[in-house]
Length: 323
Ligand code: ADP
Image (cartoon, rainbow, N blue to C red; front, side, top):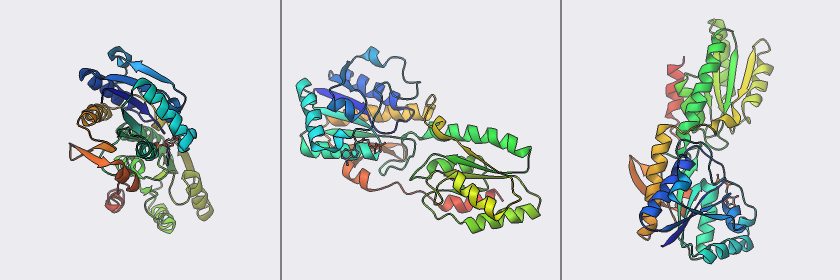
């Protein structure tokens, strides 16, 4: 490879900028030309591509979001769109791609590299952490710490009243943010998409606690949990326990924003460096991950098929610790 493109695609996550910086500077170090592709695959289709210099990525390691912006691209789902995108890369002689995104973005990369002869390397940029082939993803640590800080604040006011507090965190398909933030804030119940929501057990627990006059209860709920999130769970509890004072907070997009934590900056820098190194070594169509603190490569094909399996043992442990 002599000229590489870097893009951020799909949902954004804190730390993407640190990854872009690492890709650009490692590429330049090796004498490559580096291009920034704006708005994910959409910018590739629309030829929104800019030359990156060392200064282009100055002062961004500490910033949330992504300077390249991100988008979802309908056109890239179609062969015609991908053909246009490839023509735009060819025009500049770009012969390698680094894609920072989630499994949707990797599915796109896999299709693209199968149709056109271009090596693609993926970096897992998602707050959800649910990617196979890696212990960590860029953005999870920041998102989960934001959730913990918010829940801590809610707990302060919770303690002043006798209430059931339900906090909904992000995670449509993955319960990592809910599980980790719930453990870290001592939640009485944690509801995640990976397990069935045992509403009877929760009602039973709340009723028992009512008898013991332990009236403060925190339930952390992932948005993709069986009932459909915090408000839905609240509805059921209110129906069954008309006297309970149930409050719901949906944390929402604050979890995606903010300055990346040290951990996310380090992970993104590490992965960004190895994305370029692996393109230079001729690796293609792999995701760069970290397992047991070591860089690990997973074929994109495998990365999009498998999910990281959540350790539900923690649900049991948490029941004991929060009782
Ligand atoms: P994420 O990467 O965060 O999972 P998305 O699922 O929205 O985000 O995917 C990002 C983009 O990747 C899509 O908007 C689309 O352009 C591209 N993409 C996703 N899946 C495919 C696919 N099966 N074929 C082609 N492109 C895809």
